[in-house]
Length: 437
Ligand SMILES: [Fe+2]
Image (tube, rainbow, N blue to C red):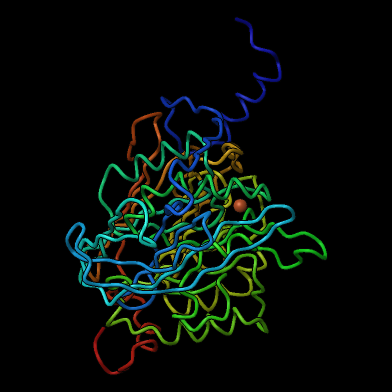
């Protein structure tokens, strides 16, 4: 078969620009959307997901078509035996002609660590269960960005679910509904088997914005109503940026699409949040954003640059260990970096926007590969961050090789809290500056 000239040129271009990749892997294209319908009654819960909501608490979120269903969760440590119960709140929203169902948010707790809880939503439908994160190391995070709801998404989710973990982190771009509101419902149903069993902590991407002049000028109508994150619990005034602690890690979710200049609320909140970290309690600090501050991909080039210029110094001074980003539909890991240069006291940056969305992969990278970029590959997949103890964690990236999940990249990390080389600033963040970290 003879290839057209344009295909040959594209092939050669890819060969020279995809950097360090696996030559044996033939990269497939986008795959079709998956549509998930609700098969239960109008009062049965659908789109169930859970999220951490302050110390020892979990927020249970679900949707019902029936507006009379109460926002109430019963829960307990044995199936069908509920010795705990809590009431919560509900919301709904309208987006042009679309009216959402009743969106319930109920906070339950206090909960014990490493414990499986069984729960019932609104007194209807099936029982669900989740496991709380551990009270001490080790703890394992999965990280997947730009998820969407395609057959690739299903592949990524299956790989995530095939191996145990404690908390999922999502650096933006969830449903790719892009104003087609029923797709938010379909996405909620697609992720329910995973998001109802482990906490899903998300931040917003550009596909969550859904702004429209005059009518929805601020955007995020669906995102804020459906994916309520613990911003009040972390003294943030916006659902678009917040922080939380899990098992010795302080995790900061920043908003790439909220104001971030030095006079902004987000900037002031971040400054206060960073200064409140006690590295003896949470020796690890991770940050998630959507638009990457470092990327050698040709897609979305420079879109995170103004945020980097505004906030990078703050993260550097606070000795943030890793920054995860999405947006670019490929995987890329950088070395420790600050202000575009290798810096052993700067965070490692990782782009992991390859969850499986409908737009496909960002295939083209800059050539030559910048020296600060360690590994880059345009393939779908997900990441795992296993924090072993206060000093060491292992990061790995798992490519979707069709139905198989293959570890293609990995690195051991040493925390700044345990590192002598960059101790000066971490001491500033300690509650007791004279103590050893
Ligand atoms: Fe994006």
